[in-house]
Image: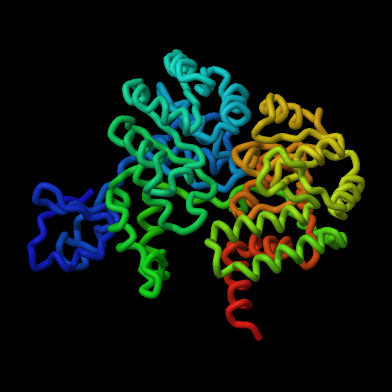
Length: 500
């Protein structure tokens, strides 16, 4: 850091320098500001900054070269953001970081505690003691927190419950996995995690997609890493690195110059790693298998479209989205009852299951993950095709995951939110999308369960798509990383309000 006294008349020269701050009558600048300060005559030309010598940490031999580089940089910095694509080994890098500290707390989704963090720790770091802090009771979670181990892993809800106990537990390292959980400055989990800035000295965030909606979502994640990178004020950060859309003040955008300054500052204490830049993985192959709705489905579908067109100007975006969900149900050959939870699901003749049967027969004896959006799909298809369905209500979830990895399960039917993050299934090379999510993040994460380090075969992704339906729009938007809900809302609204 460079510390200077700046005359009042020269202060305008420093206003473009990123990372500057004023403290105790002095201006403090990051090292990268030296050329600018010299340009304006605020620092002598012969002044140079000696870069601190980096420690070359002794790292595990099984780490890949790029993983060693990232971990070594993270350990030298002491607080760091690792924003690496899924499939590049974020969990192993996190465990390597944790292995260099005495007591580490890891926050992650419940779904990956056992089958990602605990299993990988036992496999790669058997000398380290790790504990799953999740329990059905608060007392059970406290008991786990009081165990004498090296790494404590818990989900975000457990963290909320145990926050006060964690504050005094003496952790010297904290890792937030899938840190996009704190992309919203106003969320409760973000607020609670940020409280640890002054308590736990070494803090790291891991994510493959930290900003799923817009770059401003990085702010709370980097504030946790180091609140001097972008400062403490969210709106000050927006004003510095974004421009406000005057026609819609709630929208912020970046120019090329904004992005350059943003990335320069962000890169001081984090890294963005793309899978294609570091891992020699096999190709991805996408196939779309199209089918026609049955007469019964088409009748239901057209009636629902007419209902949407008649009422779109009366509905909120939430209500509109609910109607789109109904369209997706119809495409899959069923409709959930409207009011009575005890009422039977309305089932329709559908060609979709026949197409799925054809696909599975073509794949043969290979393992397949079939991604679904509705519990009814998961349960009914698992029964029909002799597979295993995994929903939020399924017991023995971790055992099912291990059995699938070990080849004991041929067909696994599930939802991207349950298995879409942190898990590795390189035993499998086929994904079938029986139905698609509106979320690009879910779509990408689900792909990366099989396309990651350790995969040696081409990965095939088969999308079942009904002709002339919402299926086509959803897949088109996912390919372009756009919102299908927004585009459909605008298209239908324009057609109704501006008929030809």
